[in-house]
Amino acid sequence: MTESVLDYMTRLGRAAREASRVLARTSTAQKNRALEAAAAALDAAREELAAANAQDLAAGRASGLDEAMLDRLALTPARIDEMIEGLRQVARLPDPIGEIRDMRYMPSGIQVGRMRVPLGVIGIVYESRPNVTIDAASLCLKSGNATILRGGSEAIHSNQAIARCIQLGLAEAGLPAAAVQVVETTDRAAVGALISMPEFVDVIVPRGGKGLIERISREAKVPVIKHLDGICHVYIDVAADLDKAIRVADNAKTQRFAPCNTMETLLVHAAVAARALPPLGEIYRAKGVELRACPRSRELLGPGTLAASEEDWSTEYNAPILSVRVVDSLDEAIAHINHYGSHHTDAIVTESFTDARRFLAEVDSSSVMINASTRFADGFEYGLGAEIGISTDKLHARGPVGLEGLTSEKYVVFGDGHVRG
Image 1: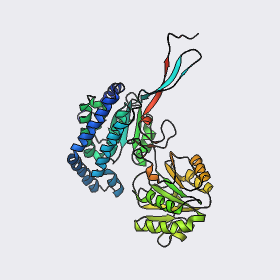
Image 2: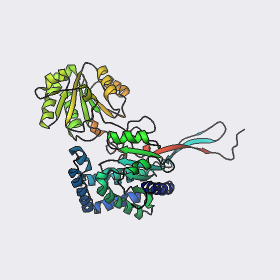
Image 3: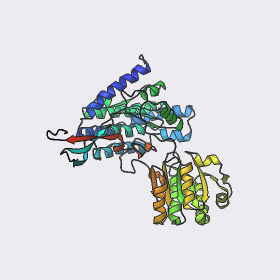
Image 4: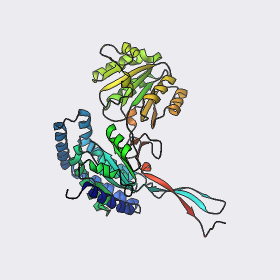
């Protein structure tokens, strides 16, 4: 690049701010046309996408990326299908922008309500997963926000190929190209610039490793929507249906090892541990899962089970490793989750309404589940069409962040020449 990184990012920021003003007044039909056209462009570019992704995968292997990172980087035909379906599902979702609610007359005679509006410009910083490019672009576009996307250097060719499809969709709908911009430089200084431009960027969403998110949270001059870890739990209660419990605990860990909503710690009530743990141990060992367990769990899980350390309870493995602990009560399970968890996703398997209600009320996580795998904590599964990330913050947005999480509300007042006395 002939211009400096700061000048380049400033140019992107200024263009995004201008585009955000166009998007704020863009009709739902026009936004949907752009999404459908981008989906068609992706479908037509499958070979190009596969070739670009192959370049990234080859470079990743050569640079020593681990299997979890390579899995996140891969654009399989099924994932391309998911991206296309994600775009079309977002197009089918109701448009939240312009919705006015809670209109009421005040004693003065004015009407007061709240209207949903875009945030403006959203910066997304992410690693590995090129499908995030589509998820972020589609949700930002439908919610009337311009976006600047800065993917990891390991996915540069994949992201550029996807960006070309998005640009085709924007052009088809007559929307400005700056509505969705993918940063073309892999220089790390681009991230520093993006998170330090409050005049152009309204919020940052980081998606990636803990180190990246900690850095952005520490250095950003722009509000951040984030989660640091995905230390997710399944608790098998004393009142659990054990067939359900085994099915849920198996799926929560082994359906995929890398995602942030995969179970990392299994908690089992002492009264059912002797019946639940031996069959689960067989399932996990057959699927190559390394078990690290407390002393009582090790006795039931049998040979080959390692002793869990204190560090294991607060570790996100993103790998075929599971920590297991036997607890004596629901209180102990809740205390363990609130102490060691990351406030991401936690599940209870129980037939007790009382225990389920207590778990829902007392576990301090962004998603809390009853008799369901933690792997459902996902924007697509929640009917959001896609997600821009999962927030474990408590302000503004929490859990999978879809369209509504990318908007805010402003007060609107209707009068008829009213003046205040």
